[in-house]
Amino acid sequence: MSRRGRRHRERPPARHVLTGREVRPLFHMVHEHVKGRLNIRLKEFKLGEEIQTALRMVAIQDLVEAIVDLTVIVVLMALSSRSDIQNSSSTQPHY
Image 1 (tube, helix red, strand yellow):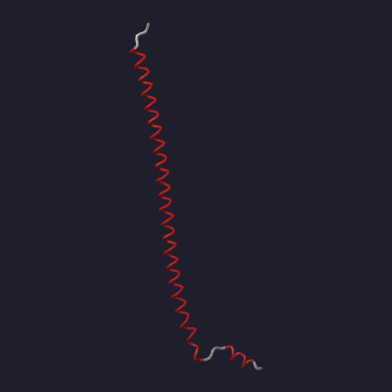
Image 2: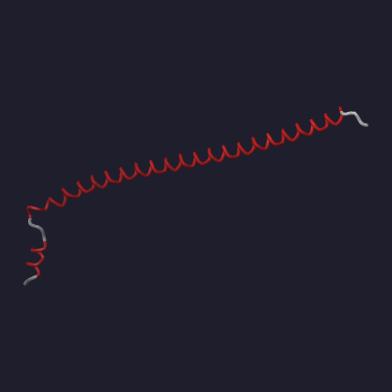
């Protein structure tokens, strides 16, 4: 078989020449649509990460505030009991 015959047989018929050109824009539109959807999902995912980070920071801040509050209460109680001991010892008569 001659080369010309094989080459001619591998090419699409003339009536299908435009088909390849018509399919490319369709694939491009589908590709852009999928890419746009994935980009939106990525932004939502990143937003979710930011919210989770903010919630973790709030939880840690609440924990620190609770510890500081407890420390302040303990110190105030210690100072209060110390002043009570000093006041009671000064008011008792010495025998």
